[in-house]
Image (cartoon, helix red, strand yellow):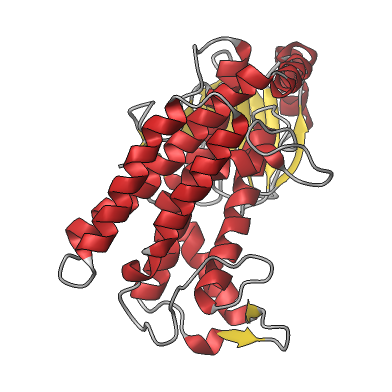
Length: 343
């Protein structure tokens, strides 16, 4: 269980939620009942299939408390939203903001600034921690080049300019990504980013983990009352969760990429778990996929200090925190959207 920005997160999948007067009760087998007053909650997010009582759902609808149900892995299932919640107004504001080039550009610049900042510090930390195993000069040079682009992003006046700088920074980052692979480089090596399809073992891992993270972010956005399909950086396209793809940019390097590097460098995966098809595409077998999913859940439970909130939360709640901060900005509670700046 975790309370964050007036949102209660119930992360134990065997928890059942019920109502006791003006209090939510959280019941678990072989655990003490937890009680939380409803009066200071804006929303409740529960992970798992056990469910909630009709009385609690009715109370939440009446009080304007959004109650969202997610799977244990974080996929959005359904929600109960009362009339006073105002999610329709929030989404209308989101749509208007997405159609406003100046407002959209401001959010996009903050997101890309965070992406470049986080990419830079992944490289800087690798150069510091593994100076005897990597080409420190090349890695630091790439980090410095990315750092120089952050100022350019902040002063950019056009969407195409921001996207061009993002592309240049990504090329700098991935040009030295292979240096960060410290073990088993015969089977896990990186030359360039390949997406559809991934053409080597490392790209197969990156693509799979990016998909997991996109799903987590999409669920967090839905739970916060936002539309995952309407973005500010990625433009609208039928079936594309553009806003989820926006926010993932902040988390690619510090969460997804570092997680993949940990899997490889700690030898939690090996070449037997990957198969190359005739088309050149590399896919993972079921056993490896399950191992990655298990490790991913463990990584999401690790504690970090949120850079804006200045409080400790699990990695898995960081997308929820950013979704809430974005919704707060759109409602006018914050002067600008504070992106996730990791270091």
